[in-house]
Length: 294
Image 1 (cartoon, one colour):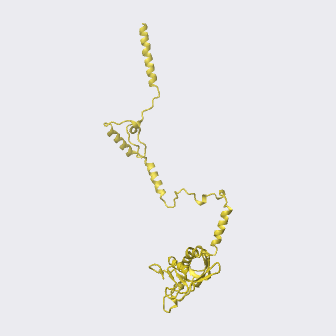
Image 2 (cartoon, rainbow, N blue to C red):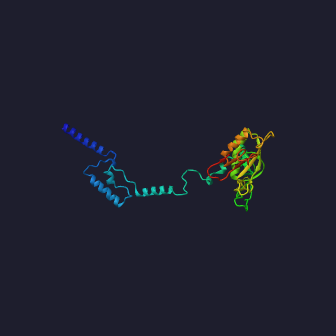
């Protein structure tokens, strides 16, 4: 009897232990990891197709998820939203650079410019005062268009210049900006360095003048008549010395004259044609075929 009682207790104990195991919180099976057998595959694919036909944008049914390892298709609403966003990013006027617009910058929170920066701005403003042709180092003033009854003469946008690259002109020269800019560069990069920074003045022999080339009757209109030429007869140094083209055409003057070929369309001087023995003729003609240097 004792043996039978022990057997009964053992059976009851095993039943209670089994019930405790069955009631434990086991994790549910992952439906995405459920392996689909070859026999079940056609049925799963049919279910996916049916769901897509009814509600393509809806999530897949739990039955499909439980029996498929395929990735879930992107909902239609999300796909359309991304397409609209991509199209909007290419629309004109849309700035995606991340830069803050000027009207959104808080200027009040920005520190004021330093005294050094203020002095720099004043110097820059002063250097541009009285300049023409958009170049601070070309001083002068814009003047009214020059009209002429002679065909080929006149200047549409003339300027009256008094200095270039910090070197004054002996007289105000009426030219257009093409020759003014070329002269400014030539003085700054060639003539002034050649004189070790001591060039203070250039004597102008001619600028705008409505006449034929070399004053020959019946010849074509000179570039002087179009405001695109200037003649330089002498160079004045800071010690008062004057070097004229007529009397001092030395190695130095020959070198700066030759270098002018890289800045002007035409350069004529001593030995070129007999008409320019006492001055340098520089012009910015619209000649085709490159520069003409003699």
